[in-house]
Image (cartoon, rainbow over all chains, first blue to last red; front, side, top):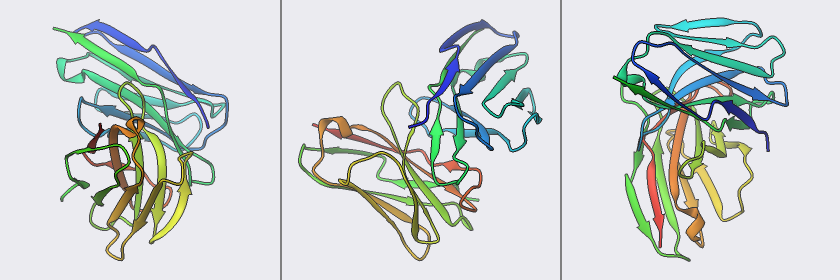
Length: 111
Length: 112
């Protein structure tokens, strides 16, 4: 199956700092999604990207769909303790009948 | 609006048994997808159903099956359970076959 590689695998940051994480693939995808998952819960959709080069914001979160359609990044500005969790990128196949999740980036925010 | 609901929340089964997990999508959503999430990994796609038909299938053995009902709710069945089937099973709904997916809280399955 497809592999989405996320980096970094984990991050430890001070409250108030900005965060950047990215997701890369060896294949082209036309839809990129970013999710956050808290322990024991289902992933929550943060941002959806549908167009190469698209830059989309949701509050303190900003995500971009790479021009090559093989990558995406997520930025979090002015981190707060509730940003703690695991962030996943996800894509749907171009036929829309397969879905792939990345390996995840674990974020810890130190107050 | 009620989000995606799943039942049961937790389940403990013995190797070789069968299990049925249930999911109700967000009202108005016609697509339901199932995922398996093993501890420490990202969700792995199992099935997608749209308008009561299987639209996509991940790389899972035939022991895994699913169906979608006329009210768009769905069941995931796993036969001949193995220890390795222990995981969080997630259901996600979407308005269309390629729409943004919204996840339920999951069912934690433990196979002993």
